[in-house]
Image 1 (cartoon, rainbow over the protein chains, first blue to last red):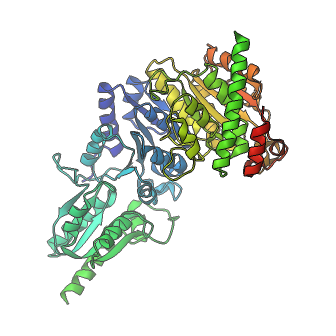
Image 2 (image 1 turned 90 degrees about the vertical axis):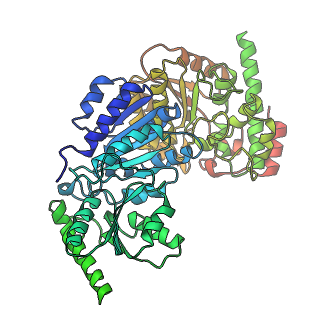
Image 3 (image 1 turned 135 degrees about the vertical axis):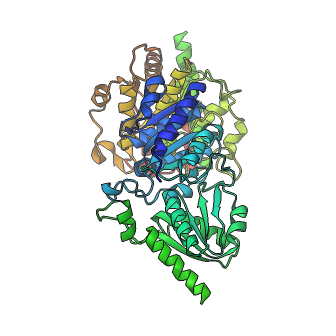
Amino acid sequence: MKEKKLMRDIFIEAVWKQMQKDRMIFFLCGDFGAVSLDNIRRDFCDRFINTGIAEQNLINVAVGLALEKYTVYAYGIAPFLTMRPYEQIRNLSIIAQVKELNVNLIGVGAGLSYDLSGPSHHCYEDISIMRLLPNIEVFSPSDLVLTEKFADIAVACKYPKYIRLDGKPVSRVYPENISIKKGFCELKTGSDICLVSTGYMTGVSLEVSEELSCAGVDIGLVDIFTMKRLNKNNLFSVLKNYRWIITLEEGFIGGGGLDGLIADLLSEKDSLIRLKKLGFKKGYVFENGDRLQLHRMNKIDGKNLKKIVEKLWKGKKY
Amino acid sequence: MEKNIIDMLLEKALYVRKETLKLHLLSPETRIASSLSAIEIYTVLYYGGILKYDSSDPEWQGRDRLIVSKGHGAISLYPIFADLKFFHKNELGRIGQPGALLKAIPDCLIPGFESINGALGNGLGEGCGISLALKAKKLAAKVFVISGDGELNEGSTWESVMFAGHHKLNNLNLIIDSNKLSMLGYCRKILDLEPLEDKFGVFGWQVDTADGHDIQNLFMKLRQMKDSTNNKPKVLIANTIKGKGIPELEKDPLCHIRSLSADRVRHILKTLK
């Protein structure tokens, strides 16, 4: 059951509340809106700026404000916010190593959120390119509860962050009291096989793992929502109980995304756990179709995931 | 009074030029030609009372903010900052050494530098953000950004030019060290910037020009720029000569990538007046 509200609305409503209490917050947007943004625009017109379709300047202005100790939100469409101004974000990463800069990059449209808009608007690369830059945290919420929690810590944690929000309604995954400290959550404990996913794909993984569970196939499921400051020892202590790990992401695989994070961890721990990476491997998706259809074409839909798991499970049995 | 100031500034400019050459002697990978064109600009900004600063508290809230967008041409600020006690003068002699404070391109670990700007085309946007912050904090301090003219090829600069004009960032002052050259030759042959004054004018900026090596002219123009009370961002196009003071650099369109030999620098230091 999908929630009615969008991640961006939950996030922006939380920022609106913060701005009522804290005068040291600026909200910048690169000519990209949301219904909820009207409240900020109306109530804080002196601290809300639409910088226009000019992402390089958007980030540089954000850095300038942050150098003066403001908490800054820079809001835009995920692929354009992360890739057009990559050098400016790199500068942010460099300066943040020696100065406190609280810049929050809020990208809407993670993965194939903009399914029908085609490859220019799909976002396959953001996790790997943002994960590459030191000093920038990457948050990838899978539901609205996490989204709101990341909005809450955006002000308190004074380092640069990239928060990737889905553009489409998502299902509820977490209870309100979920702790985000570890940076991940073992949503389901199973045996032999563990699915590891992030963002929208955690919803897909959850459905698949529940269906499999009904059929007597008990696999584990881990949702990764913090890419840098996650407790790696803790994560490994969960993963080491499995023989197979399947990473599932709506991005390119083999380029340092979620799969890279898990592969690095297994390598650091000299682990012999087998790793299967699911995502986009053939390149950009030009085909027309909604999100599910595009997932099917690229074999990352729930049905295909189920097949892959069942095949591995049978291999274990026989 | 005015004459005394000009004489003092001339003396300081000579000090800065000599010290800049000494830095190049110690660290030949520094961009000497690009650093020489901005010497009078930096000298007047800091010794002419244009910029407010407190070297004992480089992050003093009331200071004017200087962003050096042409990071490669900024080593001539080192002798000024050392002289004004932002850091100890001994640091000048250690440039480029392992563990030393000073590098060929300044970073924000060095007291006096607000940001890092080795990658061109980003200083003006950062300056716009600082300008907004100062206005929001209701501080009278001003923002100065030093850009090269070749750097204006960067599209990001023009995003910021439009932004500053649109938002009437009247506490923002851009000084262009217009030495007419980028790395591989004359700007007008590579990507013509002219008519530069008109371009800034149509984006809503107050535009003025100066002789970037004439201390008296620069002193007057920079004071006028800072005292101007209109609601526009301001740009001063300082016409300069890349490699100023060194004949072989002045006439070489490729001087950006030239280094001077140690013997040549020693000879110049003896003759420079």
